[in-house]
Amino acid sequence: MKGGESLSNETVRFSVIIPAFNAARTLNKAIDSVLDQTWRAHEIIVVDDGSSDDTALAAQAYGDRIVLVRQANAGVSAARNKGAEIASGNWLAFLDADDWFYPDRLRWHAEWIEEDPDLDFLTGDYEYRDVQGALIGTSMSAHVSGQQMLDKAAGAERVMMEAEELEEFVADHFGDTHTLSVPRARFLALGGYPLGFKVCEDVHFLTRLCASSQRVGVVCQPTAVYRIHAASATRKDPVMAQRYNVETLRDLASRTRDMPGAIRRGVTRRLASGRLNLAYALNRTGRRSQAVAAVLPSLLESPGTRSIRNLLSVIKG
Image (cartoon, rainbow, N blue to C red; front, side, top):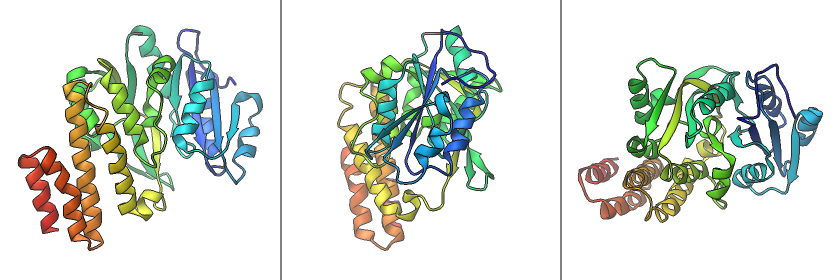
């Protein structure tokens, strides 16, 4: 279960959880990137979520350097939650089977946690790359909340995100699942990732995490790679993907009553953005009336200049 020539101790013990579904072609790169960390992972847990290819064989080749769990197909949320349930580390990190960490990803977070153990969670920048490995862009530079943190950092490698800055982060976050580090006890107390949603489950959990957070550590260097697939489900059927996105966000919005005002406002903005993206996807397929219907709820819930502007944008096509 141990790997890499790295520094580590008993203060920060990372359990890295890799959910895998039919990932035989990419799983090795993901696992290797964890084994090559400059801060050794306490354990690597691969959850084979009912794969029908050679995913299990690819994982078994690593022997006792990893923990392999196999389950009937239940979705990525269930796989991550299963990994968290059996983890023996005190901090959790997640990596999808087609992405990878950069070597210092765990070290940058672990050293900061050692300095400041009261951090609620940590996140960071990452790169978008295509299937050939070509760089497409970086997450922090592509999101307003990320740009704000980069400006605040003023060239420093890390910066603190305070509670009042979480609205922008919730509205359109820059850190994805593979840059998230969260205490295992906190993850379990929040109930982990929600079940029954096809997309946006990461936003659902991250928002609930933000709602109980005051201080978030942000590493301003790329810590991981998110691989963009042209044939992914969200790109093959963008209308359906956006419908699923709105469905998840509506459920999240229904849970915000007792959350801080900044979080509630961030969720409202994110839901409005999700509805607008659904409307744009519908417009591109010629379903103008459905597109208008998609954004009308935001106008009714939050009447104002932004909602009117979005509605006019959809009407104009």
